[in-house]
Image (cartoon, rainbow, N blue to C red; front, side, top):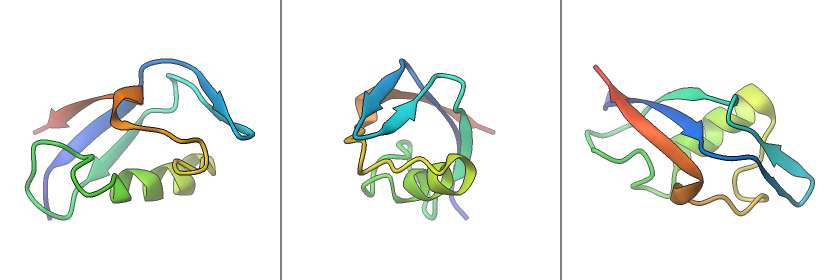
Length: 73
């Protein structure tokens, strides 16, 4: 297992029928040790948002700059 991050949107974003709000915070574990959870196209982040909120990261054209993240532990 890799590092664990807490990821939180920095603002409300509405695009393509998808809504992302700052209260949609997730905790994600990366598959490799890295200091950035977005290093591999945000694969784990996309999966976690779909699983928890049925939010499609790609469909809403999200980028790293729509989020803030903090390494846990």
